[in-house]
Image 1 (cartoon, rainbow, N blue to C red):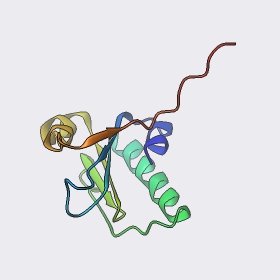
Image 2: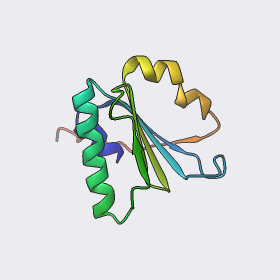
Image 3: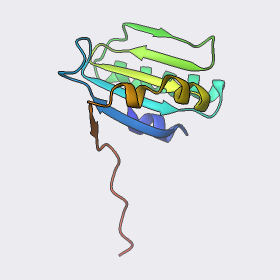
Length: 111
C-alpha cells in the first residue's frame, strides 16, 4: 500500500508497525496527498490492491472532506492527509512508540 500511495504521487509515505501498541490494527500507512482528487485516486488504488491481496475493506471515510481519507482493512489502516491536516493531526508523533517500517525499494545503482 505504501508503494501504491507513492506511485500515485503521494509524498511523505510512512509505514508504522503498531502491533502491540494498538489494540485494533497492526500497521498504519500514512501519506500526504496533493489534492482532494489525487487523494481519492490514491486511496481507490489502495482499495483495489487490498481486494487483490485478500484484505477486506471494513470502512472508508473522509472522501467528502478532502482533508483526510482513512480506509480500514483490519490489519492495515491507510491515512491519506492534506499537508495541513497531517500537520494538525500529527499521527506520526501520536504513534511515536511504533516502529517505522523500511518499505522503500533501494535505488538502482548506475552500473
